[in-house]
Image: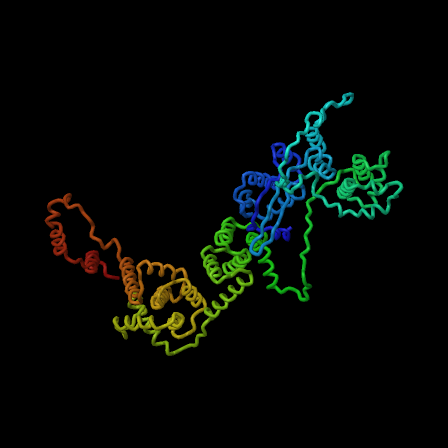
Length: 594
């Protein structure tokens, strides 16, 4: 079914017509007789078109309107549409234009109940869906048998019995009253699929004259052959059994004979229906001598799929998320971008962002493509390829050669980190503070970021992770080169000689908030920040004087008498010689030291 969805795109325009008035009786027929056959989705689409068509003022609608109103993807809308077409409830008209495609939908009334039940396909289809008991109840409900007219004579007056003509001058009939659409009396059914020539070859002209096979009889024969899957040879026997005494084909007898023959030869269970749609073969004007390349196949997909289908295909044929659908709808409807160009944009964005769509990123690319005049998938693909080529040249990894000459710059940058970022291990007495500041700022102003990164590594090739971080930061941060170099210098020495993109983003956001626009301002701010950070770290609550309510202290404490007492006691207390005391106690006891 996927190939069939190419016949309908969400951006295709539509208008609705109701050639015949519809009433509550038709609504009842649709709900009770047709819904079991075509399903609730198709019936919802029918009632939606009915409601929109009755008071339709704005005819320039797109199929996005139906998708949003019915909460259906375009594939489901298409399946519902063809189900209505097959059952005779909808006629679709299409017009191809250079830039768009338009449809007209004629909402057709259902068949009358008697015609419905007389049709062998519809009646058997309904029977197989709802079962015998429910089928009989519905048939009795819609086809009510009135009292018989046997023994009565028809006494109704004719028109001429009541009205007499009067000579008048009639105005010319210039008005075209016919809508050009015929009210359906049958379901859409192609009788040419049945081989009537093979049927005639096995029938005797004397037994079954050629005149017996009228258009109505042929239609019924083709339907029965389709319903029961009979061959022309099978239908020869059935037609022969269906002739009446006048050697004419009786419709009721033909249906009964087909049913009996089916039960005797195939199965006693009634046949069932399953949905099947023929895929139209694509017409090729010129034979293709060479097979399509991968690029040609991609271009065909971009041209044939709708943006919603492209999203679904990239998601593994799963339903896209509502935000993604809303985004591509905005590009197509609000910004009037061709669907193939939007498909290329979706595909390119998913490749660049690991399968995710970014609104700002897509809007930026869409703006550039529209400004450049991209109208086809080929033009959009070329722009994407050119952009990638330019980006690759811009991002081409720089070849680093170890340079001993950078050792001087490394010592300068290291010493500057010791002074401005309060890193004790990096301080160097060979430089004065003013000299460090002047030379460091000049270095930041005159050096490219990748070269500065090599200087920070003492002339050696930087690590690949640090290179990637700096390259991504260059793309993301909009700041002067000298400030960017100061940012790398600060982050490098304050994060153990390695770079982290999140850390850089946090510092850059803080500097942007402080409106730092020069390398000097960046160094001053970094120095002040590190000093305040160090002061806060070493400052503890134990160094503070205890707060005491002096009003509650005694007078002798206020006068400082306790301090004098403590000082006197300290001066008067002799220093105790514990070793002498020990020897004295031993002597009194008459013991020696041993």
